[in-house]
Image 1: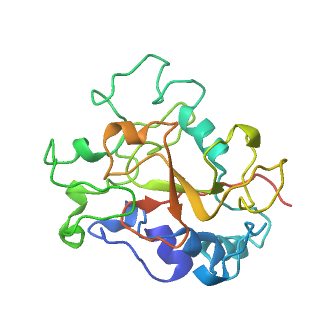
Image 2: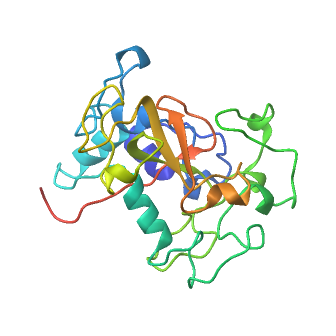
Length: 238
């Protein structure tokens, strides 16, 4: 949250108690990267972040020498798995769902097996404004890092990826899906217009929704308390 505030000048998050080191939430793909209205949404993802977005502002601060951006979902999943092919990072051993998830998810909240807080897709609980960080997001780094040194890949906030949504991603071959389904481009594979991928699940999901392979698609301008992101940073100058 402190990083977002430094870049954008305000904090959109709900869970602001001890918020400096909690993940920013209530941020949409639109706020992070595009800044275009729904009725103006293009059939393809802009190559570079649009002026007024978080990523554009971050690039400007770097002197536009570093290509800060969202990861594509293939990059996100590779980073999450950290060198092994299991559903959760670790030493490669099979992990029983609900026994151990290295991150904040629905049943790991402070009040234990909390079945009263439940989100389905894009619908927040009616009392979301009254929830505290103790039973919502966790401070970044509260759980162990993975083998690549990355924290919070599972749970906490579901993380936006650059890709437009496509049900079958095999044809993309690890490349970001940058065009909508009404454009015939077999090289990239078409995605669904206006919907983008989020990965990793959030504090509102059961453990199965935080697996490294779990995918969810969200309309690009949704800015609810379960959505956040991490920054991909290329090394070196353009």
